[in-house]
Length: 103
Image 1 (cartoon, one colour):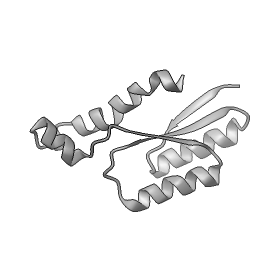
Image 2: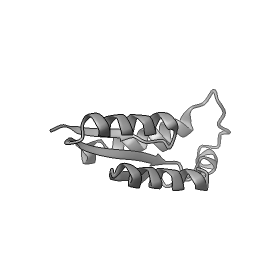
Image 3: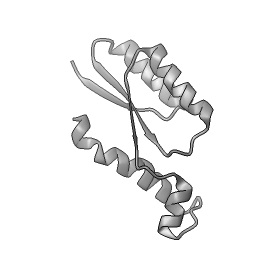
Image 4: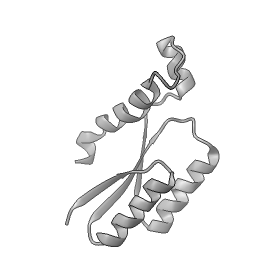
C-alpha cells in the first residue's frame, strides 16, 4: 500500500489526476491537498469540496494566512506575472512546511 498526495487546485487537470489515482490505486492511501490563497472564487471552494465528497477522498487544506493583496502590502511590492512571490509564498512555502506532517 502506497501513499499518494495530490496537489488539488480545483482545476480539471487535478480532478482528472485524482480520479485516475483513485481508479487505478483504489487500495492505496490517497489525500487531496489544497493550498489556499484565501483569494479564490467562492465557486472554487464549492467545487473542491464537492469533488472531495464525490471521489470519497479526504482533503487537507493549508494556508499562509494571507491573501495576495495582504502579501503585496507586507512586501511593499506590486506582484505581476514577472514576480512569482504569490505562488512561492502562498502555495509552495505552505506546501513545504507541510512536508513533515504529510510524511
